[in-house]
Amino acid sequence: MVEKDSRRLIPGTDTLLSHPRIQQAAQRLSPHVVKGLIRSAQQRARRGELAPEEVQSEVLAQLGSLRASSLQPVINATGVIVHTNLGRAPLSHSAREAVAEAAGYVDVEMDLSTGRRSRRGAEARRALIEACPHAEDALVVNNGAAALALATAALAGTGEVVISRGELVEIGAGFRLPDLLAATGARLREVGATNRTHLADYSAVAGEAAAVLKVHPSNYLIRGFTSSVPVADLAALCREHGLPLIVDVGSGLLVPDPLLPDEPDLSGALADGADLVIASGDKLLGGPQAGLLLGSASMIAALEKHPLARAMRVDKLTLAALEATLRGGQTPVQAALHADPEALRSRSADLATKVGGQVVAHEGRVGGGGGAEVPLPGWAVQLPDSAAAALRAADPAILTRTTGSVCLVDLRCVPQEQDDVVAETIRSVLASLPAEEGGRP
Ligand SMILES: *Cc1c(COP(=O)(O)O)cnc(C)c1O
Image (tube, rainbow, N blue to C red; front, top):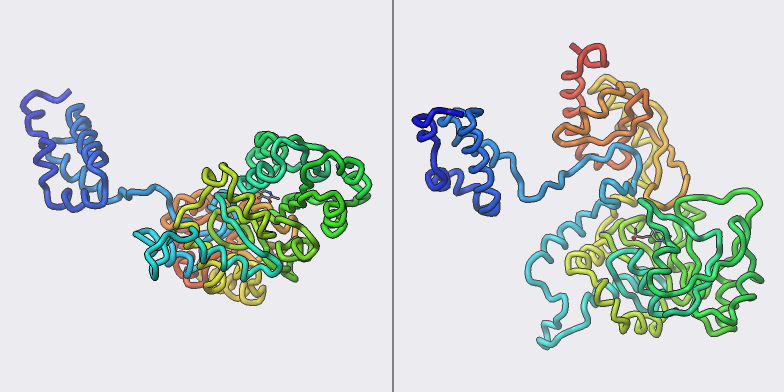
């Protein structure tokens, strides 16, 4: 404890709050945050950890580095495009602008020409329909899991949903599809075996079913003695029994991509006869987190009427980002997926020259439960293993691919205009590493 006299020298809260720079900072931070910082600096001074005359500068320093949101932009140098831990798809420039504009008052549910209420997010839905041939109507909910739950609840109720045992997948972080379906009140009717399911397995139970669900097992492959039933065959069976056919394609390709021949697309599933298709907005589509439902007008109308639809409604920011993703310029996901290996090699060589590393062949990945195991040929700059943690802690933070013995910097998902920042950051990080860890003295 500091002596009484010295404690009296600690500046009071009101004095500190009236300091012009603190007032300035208080405009971008909540009063309780500012007061909290002041209180903690005063307490440290009372405990003798800080001299009374240092309190003000300490508060100013803390305020200077504090932002209202703690989410930190990260440079993704892992080569994994849809990186779940890094927020999946980065938004396109058009989508970012749209989000910023939609942050204020917007006509999300109003027709400005008549002044009347309009269908919420009508243009985002129109953009989806335009981008996905064969879709009559569309609905957007919070994420793929919500879309699946809504479709099951609205179309199957407490009835039986038929699904192949080969498609009872866990998507990630313990999210198991069968648990989600069961939580809606529907009963699962599992058919077939893990590796093989035939049309006869479905037709044997179709008489008692309320809906048939086909799920793309996005994140794993069944190889060897396998078979599953194509959407077209399931569609014929469902028509015969008057059952809705729901197809969850997972990753959100609207139309086929030659680079990902095994990845199903929404348009193809509808063309093959699915009544309703489901996908995520922030995987291969490259947009905001969202669950997309497309299909026949009557199915979408049934989903919209279900009470759960309101609980899963997306906000204006999502609608703005989604529409701009569909109607704006190329998404970063598309750019990274179709990056020219030769251009990647040349950028990597430039980086290696600047930071002193070696260029090695390195395959990128789609990641995030899409394009399971499709290798994307490319290159990386190899750095000492110890650089990985230091780069993560750097400003800007750079996330690399680590193998346990080396740290690989893959530029596939790095916008080219950030190459110089990446080089600068790596250079200063390497210079600060101890020499025995590969740093340069
Ligand atoms: C990713 C995925 C989901 C879950 O979608 P979220 O948008 O993460 O909720 C559901 N089904 C499949 C097949 C998926 O790949």
